[in-house]
Length: 334
Image (cartoon, rainbow, N blue to C red; front, side, top):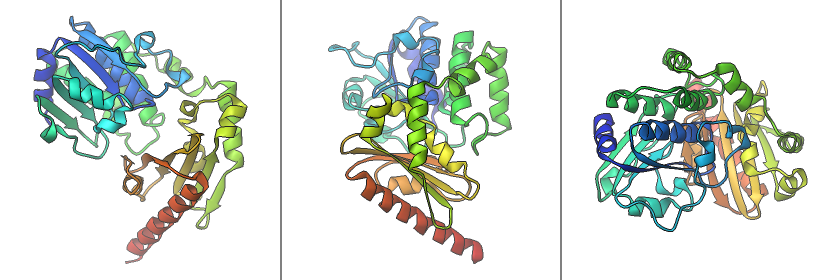
């Protein structure tokens, strides 16, 4: 990790473009907006970006209206690119390659498994990847602390949302004592836990709820109930008037079954393009499984994109998960 180097690059910059992974979740967008507000409050020119669609549930975040979903023809000269909650160019989405190529310097802040690509980047670069952090927002807060800046109420709202959503409401294995200390710090800075929780977890659109109902109807159990699978097709999205961003937490319903260790959600929002979300409860490293298909993530939460037939992909992924379950069982026996 190079937090001091990251702080030096940020302190030296004037124009910044901030972008998280495409189809940003609460951590990606909360980090982009929170850190963007920190930079703006210290006189920097900031362009927060989010590509591939944003969930409506995040529209309450301060600064949401100013998010760029497409890039202008001309970007600021000599800008610093802040990659947040991802460390691979392709994870930024369709504009990722252009952003990386045109940036004068690069700072990567992430908590997913991986190493980043600073060694290959031709300009000044700092990469801070800490898989022990509960969220990328936690790393953003460390950076702000090193810079000696204060966290405003708006920033606290963005960062608290990131922490809350990426820990599943403080339920996931990335929750620690430090997580609650961070949450308390953000509440002291002005974040409203009740308001944010309502927006994140209890503001579901009717189209999203209908799509969830269709997804649950497809639920299947395999390997003695230890693997659950749900499938969403383009027809389902069209029937409900829903978007892919509406499916963010669907896989958690499949993981919530008492016997399930690994849950799989296979989504074909557009014909031929399949997204797969993987969640495990305890001992299966789903990031390793996702990596087999060119994806990645955390030990207990990962995913990937692939082209092909969703039914075939569902069967292939379920079979692979079954192999991992078998290996895990053999290790426990030995």
